Image 1: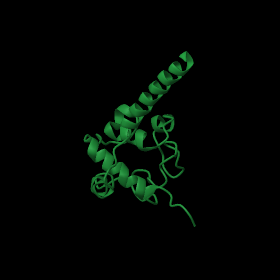
Image 2: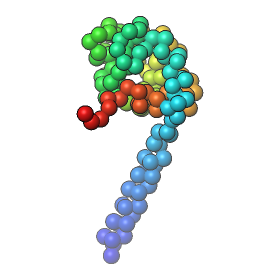
Image 3: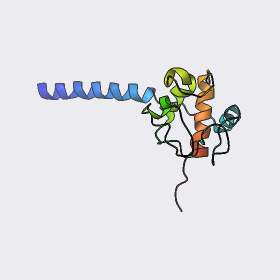
Image 4: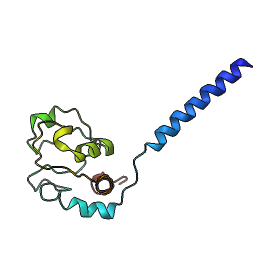
Length: 133
């Protein structure tokens, strides 16, 4: 009987941990609004081929920061160890200079969380590789 009680207590603790993790999930952004937010990024970044002063964002999700061969990154960016996903991009966009100290991107950041959520939702659609043939 005691082992059953212990198992139920452990299961309850596990469920509590899972609920906390689920409540910390990123809110879904609005890609249409994100496209508008991206206009401030488009001055330096392209979504496809490198044709601007900043690196192309094509295929950025899952890629190590500072790893494109067609752009000369700062030492800080190449040594950061950051792999781009929604969470790392959110933190970086909030305060680029604080997240990767010494990077060359001269941009103060996107201060509003909802704007970052929307921008990331847009980028996830716009620069992820398409599936299938």
